[in-house]
Length: 507
Image 1: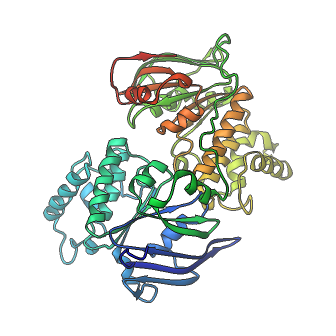
Image 2 (image 1 turned 90 degrees about the horizontal axis):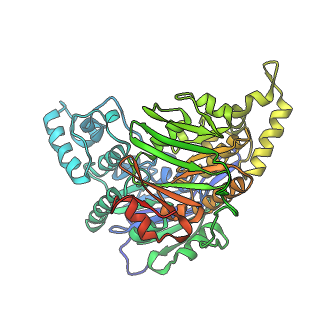
């Protein structure tokens, strides 16, 4: 990289430790103007800690941080030149889009003496148009869609008065393909203007599409920094994992879905908010994939089947018996489990320990006379951690400090401790590295081969092609295709997802 411009930010020998774990072990990082620098690594590799150190949110135990050659740890105002977009939404719901766009007002030039609301609306309108946000400056943030909230966070960071570095942590996790393409155009504009951009994503196509440089982290250490042009997907994955991963591996359950057997789930003419006239069958021992754009109605449908959302008409038969509407407790009692895509909001209890998070799902199995049997609890938690490869220094560690992949495996293990017969996975690998994804795929395959019926909702076509026995596509709240995954070309599936052509049935 000798011909490249000098770094605008340099981190040297950064070390950061927490009780029981060294998160960063003498990591170096150099960010150059006009370059997109990818941080790559498996969940728990240290990327999030490094980002927080870079943004000035966490101080390192050892090391040096230079911004334009000056010591940022001695002059922390220098961190104001780094804009950070976190992975999780961090907005004020009851406040307007414009107010969220320019908070804190003093730092963005609107609150020195008096607050110029007219000027703030005009500036917000320009950013709304630039980032393609479907909202007005006076709209309350909690009334706009999650993808628009994600774009708002990015616009808020990019709209700051002055910054040299923009950090984007999993910025496309809630965006459609068109919204992602629009965001990437803006990122390229910022790069052309000389901004240094830090980009974190577990999606290989995005990494290779956008990245100029990459630093690979593994177990808190830097494996090395490289130009993206010298990397291949296989070489990058091997650096991240420390060993080769067979990217061509498939996870369809063997002998999936005996077509002569009675279906484990039959959905007939189901309609509700966000979906219309849905009918399909799930067979025992198969993985049934659901594909579609954000807003196609997949999650709303699954939550209604589970009983969490209302329905207007139609019925769901689970093992031949009707499921009561609006009663998720009855669904769980009958042997159904729904795993939400919003892991941090609907899956874990972040301030409770890993042990407590697992135990909460099986309290009826652990309690005797209203008292939890500690020895039995310890055995069951240890079994879940072993069987589902949940990695933690202690079962008593707060689950919020585990990597996203280990949180997800803990949730799956908790669900399976109830011995369900039907599992609905809604975006189960969102924000998870490729090595952990493959672990979860193997878990799904094993469960299906043990006779569990699985519905897999995913926005990643490669994930559906790797795992699903069949794929159903949805568009604007309706099923518009049903396909045999093994024989259907990818372009046919993509065409159905975007609504091209008439309703199709290839399976």
